[in-house]
Image 1 (cartoon, helix red, strand yellow):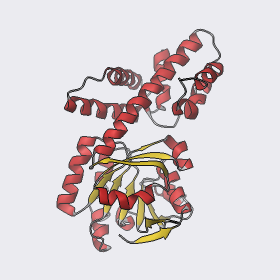
Image 2: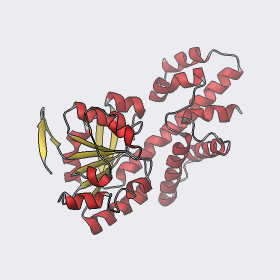
Image 3: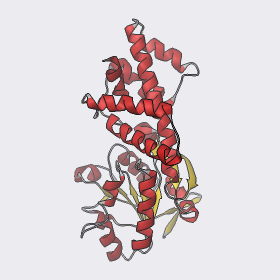
Image 4: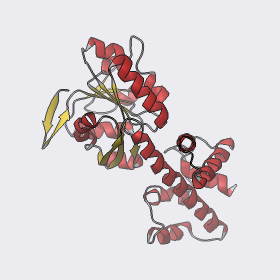
Amino acid sequence: MTQITNAETPVPSSVALLGTGPMGAPIARNLIAAGVPLKLWNRTAHKARAIHGGQPTDSPAEAASAVVLTVLPDLPQVEQLLHGPGGLLAGWKVNRIDNPVLVVHGTVSPVAVAAFAAECRKTHGITVIDAPLSGGIIGAEEGRLSIMVGGPGDVVKRLKPLFELYGATVLRFGNTGAGSIAKACNQIVVAATVTAISEAMVLAEASGLDLGHVQEILAGGLANSEVLRQKGQRWIEADFDGGGSAKNQLKDLTFIAEIAAESGLDLPVSSSVRSAFQTMISQGLGELDHTGIYLSIRA
């Protein structure tokens, strides 16, 4: 892997980012600001072209680099990038890149990503790293994401200086799949917190309390959280458009149920919250931010 020295730490210099959506775009901007030459690709091309200082490409093949970061919703979207004349496999071959690294930043099934990594290594010589993110769009913009990493230790060590350009906390948990298990633990807390705050807001509203004042009290005590800091205004303004969708939150909770079943665990809070999000989505609210579960509870 070709490397450059950026300040005190070596950073890979052959890097691409595929998926310049709400999370991918600010990550790309942070990398470019740090001086990383960055190839970009997005299915909706104008989103990649809108990132100043990047190198937009017309296909994953054209973007193929020694390190490819994918910021996509789920593993099937990553798998679709590999094949065909415009796919990464073709691009790596043309560019004579041996042993490329494919980073999966989306929240995916730990079981599925471990199997995907084994197949990619065996068939194509690709090292797959699962590195899900936490911190939301604000965390991505501020370069202070938490990055939970699974993969071979030597490869993760080489990638860490890159990850630290947009992550404040970067930890390796084990082999590929372990990062996604850590993200599942994170999502249990996030989904439960979003639901708990929503219940509190519904109770406060039904009792005639000022939601802003209630949130001020919560923020001043043990009930404070990053969820409240980043998203508190959504409940006050009843604005649940955009953000991390309820549909994706349910996807994460389904992965948690999958891991729990494999481990022989009964996770009552996760099961209850999953049921609440299933109800929300059945009401046609799945595209709203997950804080929109407030509307489902209120109904």
